[in-house]
Length: 200
Length: 200
Ligand SMILES: [Ca+2]
Image (cartoon, rainbow over all chains, first blue to last red; front, side):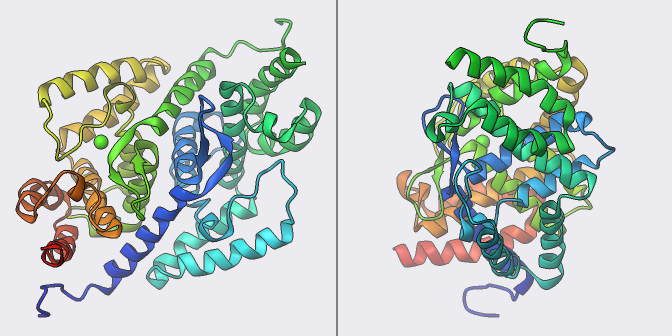
């Protein structure tokens, strides 16, 4: 036994290295502001918030879904931003460069875990990214549905910061939200329209 | 049809009021600092972090557990702090007053949801608080296991702020962490001991 009484626990050691590295997601800033507009949201609290959206709104998904799988996906979906940063949806981004950076980040971060677990969690993240299964489509839609709700609460938020108009919003967001959650898009659309009308 | 095209969706309306109220958890500050010590952690990002702990460390629970139920519990466990605030574990608190405030908060917050869903989610929170089922015991242990790991990363964190010694830490934390996760306590204890030895 080593003098400090630490047993050999390589599996748990690796898991803890991963979990403490994950803490850095709390320092990744997003373009969206929290409800009162007082500061930018970070990607860790955003992940919590949309996991809660999944828990509460799962019944509104377009297809039959496993809500717990959606929640797992949303807990993991932004981890790659620890290395790759958050790409603002209304900003100008090089999609191929973002994807390459995120793949490298996934390799590094999930690679910290025991191999079997790293592969299993990375598979959940890849499923989210591929946006094909009912769970991934709903998760992706929630990821796009939450920020406009925060913008409405904050009186403009990232729409104001990026000079976004209703046309731009609808063109960019309608397909993304409606794909996995048409009912949520139908609910959101008139509220956003009312905001932009009042702001004119 | 009303002029703004909003259909009558009382169930979804209520769920969205709840989810936007939940955003306020991002403004509840905890006694623990994030990994680099740069700022205090908030209860929303803390909830994300320990849900991720559950996802990764579920295999180390003392009893057979439903990891997804633990995750649901942890997503919800701190919501009452929106009204009741976070009671620092090393601070002087009136436990009965805290519990009364948290029960009132649960009544108000879960009461925003459709009645069936509010009752179901409140039951998960009550299960966590009761700390009796295997899932609740593991969830409670994770809630106590994460902060000392952040303190170790931050070089003292809330231990320094509250003048906590190794004896106080062991007396307060050992039973709480070991109850649902003795293996995690066994892993943590020598690391904390090494920190306090080096700090002497
Ligand atoms: Ca707490």
